Length: 329
Image (tube, rainbow, N blue to C red; front, top):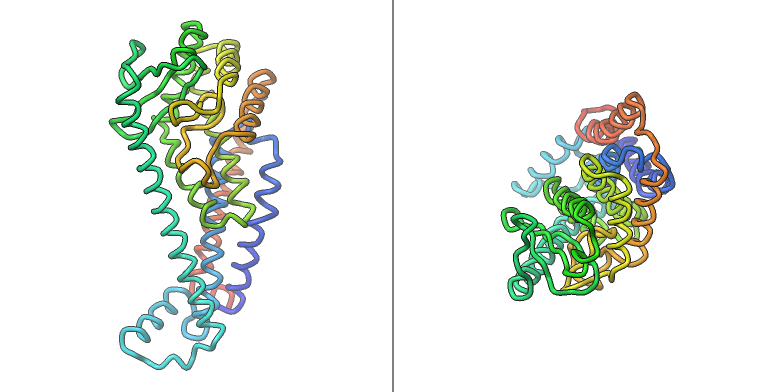
């Protein structure tokens, strides 16, 4: 497993820096946002697996020919008090680092989920006091606010779309339908789960370029995906006008943010690194409008297939290196 650990380390470094930087500068994701979303997820998963795997493989190298064999040997040492003389200082250090990093990632994921649920619970309590049901459909409420505001609050059967009086007064019926379809797309496609995962990833490893670039890209891509759903029934002109009107409002109202103007309701507390809004929302809005004004055809099917094959390869390579006995012996 000697070369396996070094190859995994190189893969982790490549996926943490040059690959996300290059992808973040590419123009094609706006043409096929779903494919780009899958690629960002594959990069994040493969990067994390390679990072932890490199330390595990190096630490277990003296006692196993692959990860599974090494873990069995390590379990025997722990459970049956077998001698650990085969493991040197640096091997034990690598194993400890891998365990700490794994625990840190899992803890941050759970902590972020707790913050999400706490904020959403408080927000629902505010809406119960301040909002009134809308005539535009079930699961839609209206708040008394003069500025144009639209966002969704995920929560399974309790999911709601929040609109403001100012928004409803400013939009024509077709534009309002576009907003509602856009917000409903966020809920039905479970975009909040993606935001949760990438927000936790950035919280856990804020110094890794992948985490910041991936979160920014995901925020933009989910808006494009929701726009594409709205375009199935509404015209581009209608959607562009709705985006412009909502973007003219403030970044928040009643504790929420204007999802339609470029950022879903923040899934972490204000002030915590990883929240949406601000300059990032302005960039996302500009990208969405530019994409609608100057549409380009989706990636050809062969190129999309090539990207999907790359996603599978990104996940398969570190997995194979970890579990195949003597692959690089």
